[in-house]
Image (cartoon, rainbow, N blue to C red; front, side, top):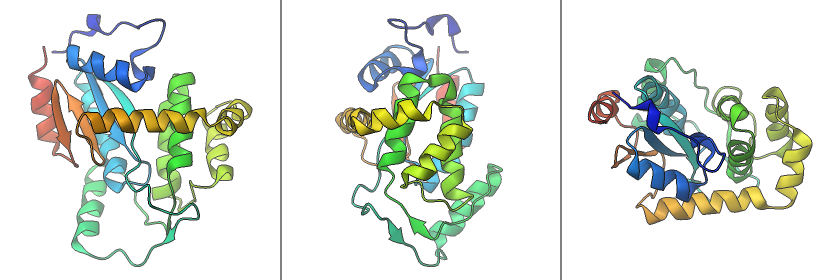
Length: 222
């Protein structure tokens, strides 16, 4: 079982809103903290929402850190063709198992704006983060909306009860984009090269791992 007594705030911050360096250091020292690197346009990360929910049920605190899987996507995004190969079939099956609807969007946006906005919320309004992250995932994978557009991001911020004026000002100052870079640099220093990836009880796990693997890692926590 996870010892929840270990999960105390640091310098007035909750575990879930720690900056990447502090969060990773705490996770390496405390098996009750799990790190998850994600991208909002990664279908495996979309499904990984269910894996993270399971980790929380096991007693973990999950710290979500952004990592842009495809920084080469142009600002205007890319038009996508028919998703019909084996990989997409597997993704659809996994989404169904996780009770997550999935409708492939016609375009693949550049996710950095959405990631920066989500990371700003995680660090500054952590109680709204989960809803905002989920809303952005749904915008892309369910509603087919362009999360590379500021209008879309701001709409989902309002839906998630986030102060859009403060978010807009932060984005104009570029600090949220620096947050993403910090998270990516920390991830790369710990051998993260893509999403999803977890640091669980001292173990680095990449890809959409089976639920049983995360259960085993949880069972080994003390």
